[in-house]
Image 1 (spheres, rainbow, N blue to C red):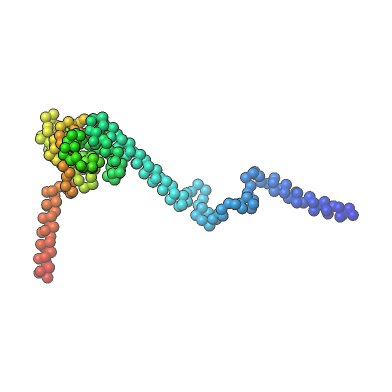
Image 2 (cartoon, rainbow, N blue to C red):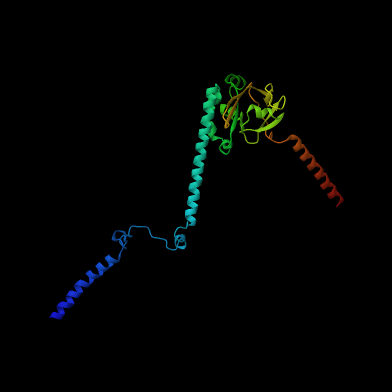
Length: 252
């Protein structure tokens, strides 16, 4: 009878002892996960790239997601920078009295050329009355884009050379600026596509330069960024090469 009592007591106490031992061996019972805790969790891919990387190393998937995030952040920053630059252009043109161009400035945020150009800008601003009389039906945003140069070109810079090509905000189009005399003299007459700069250096902070034009600058032709003499020289070389090829073909 005593032996039976000891056996029943052992059967009753052993599970309790096992539970107590397991609880004591766990560092923190609150952080211990059981099979029931994982019942509603998604299955873990133990064979995925995470199992092959050591602690602290970034997996390929994490690197890809990080690269995408950094790209989105750069795009967002570029868009914000462009919006700020456009607002600066608008406010300065409005302040200087070029209200027609100022009203069109907000639409510059859609320009792919300006979006990819982080440098300074030069605006050859046209008076309102000139725009209204010379091209009353022209979209003002197009007129503004046609009068924006990529880069800072204050009056002294334009007068430093008798002639220079100036890239515009229209891809593949360039202005040709001409100075009556090189050297930056105060009496220089500078024209852009044969239109005189009547009010130079109305604004210049290093990032934005504004000149007041005497009239509306005619849109330059496509390909105006190329050196005509260089192109003619290349074409003549091509003609000679074609002639040689024909002579060799006839001789064969």
